[in-house]
Length: 340
Ligand code: ATP
Ligand code: MG
Image (tube, rainbow, N blue to C red; front, side, top):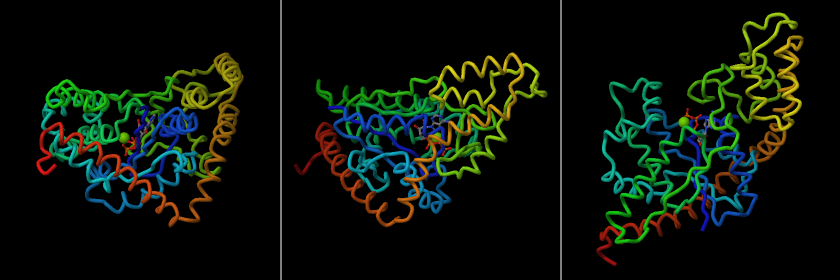
């Protein structure tokens, strides 16, 4: 069986980093028909670990994320889209996995460490936040996922999951593989593993406010491209320019399929004589080609939020059935199925 589990936190609308890091890969995998089951999770419980005082934000973004999914081409007939908090089995699994992980192991997780610094949690880390990699292990294993298409920031989470799976199977498996060890699936394009923000910061991220959103209008996208960080030493058009750290070229490498044209432009820019405005215009046309169909599909679904919520309800019921089966297998292995 080949099974996918992946998802996003409903802390905002989805952006181009999500798109290249995971979303467009998911749509491709979905349409390849090579997977037996696909689960896409809106991770609201995880979003609450650092937004617990603002549940309204999480609530409101569930619909936004669902709309972005549908806009990007996820098809509820092929992919089960569901809401994490409504699958209680996930939290029961988390509780059992907690015994298999030490606090110091959690504190060593580089992504969590960076997030703690970013959110100024150092002095008072919510226990739920520190433990979210464990809950992610529950999310992945509850669906017997073999494949997890995500961006590079998720590598430590997948490592943690694999450790939990091995330990669980070791302790409770009696020689059997009760839990499946998943593989991470990173984008093949190096840049897409971690797309930088329009400000040139290492990662486009909702938390950093440096995003182009999938639902931004054509004008908004144009404005953001205008603001993009280029080469501060490239003052006159005739000046030779640098492409290292020049976000406009980084984005062309991430999004433009016409590699030759990009190579020619890079050469011209470095030689001098190619203005930033021209390169930015080109990037705009490349991005619009991707964003126009997403926007159109998103708009259609936006007119019928009840239907979208109904789709989530059906997906959640289906996800819950699957997670319940896995949980019952887990409890049997742990010998805590007393009334069976
Ligand atoms: P938050 O700031 O709330 O953590 P985020 O922008 O990091 O939001 P997540 O919901 O945490 O987004 O990430 C969802 C998925 O998108 C993950 O698979 C993650 O690896 C991927 N992803 C997020 N940002 C990027 C990026 N800039 N480049 C590549 N992949 C990304
Ligand atoms: Mg994140």
